[in-house]
Length: 126
Image 1 (cartoon, rainbow, N blue to C red):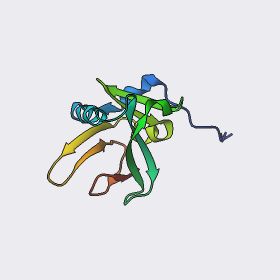
Image 2: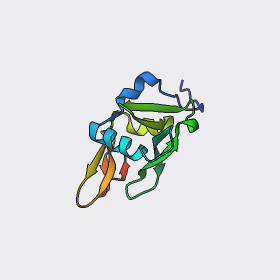
Image 3: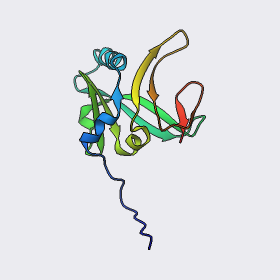
């Protein structure tokens, strides 16, 4: 017998949160960005459909006041990142990093779940 459930996705516990890591370089950049933002600001990462390879990483500044019980919090020092449960399932095991080169200054996700990614690194497929 096969059971099919149409329930809400299981929300990972906060104890699962360390499976997404913020590098020290990314943490430093997040802290710098938040210096000019209102108190209680955080970086939010979401995954949406679209982009060259199927899914896109989205980074935006948000308020901790918008945190819901479905958000996972990942921290490194004073750097705090919120990830909703659906997006977390796509990047579990990843490292949030930051690169500053001649071509681009950007946050990047080193995602072991991604089968392919586009050249700019902002989209991926599973």
